[in-house]
Amino acid sequence: MPKKHYSIIVEQDEDGVLLVTCPNFTGCHSYGNTIDEAIENITEAIGACLEDDSSEEPTRFIGVRDIEIAAC
Image (cartoon, rainbow, N blue to C red):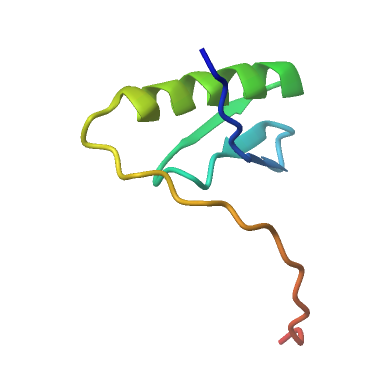
């Protein structure tokens, strides 16, 4: 069975918890206390999105950009 690749975004909150998002699917988020746990959890979440017949067609992730905005 061929494998597909999905991009994920990893962030860390103020408590040190890793928050992960797969931008290919609306609402596909998870978390973990370690990077391995976070990746395992988002892998399960992506699997659930792929199995959900009502899930939107995956979008194509383009990338992340850094922009500069003047502080208020």
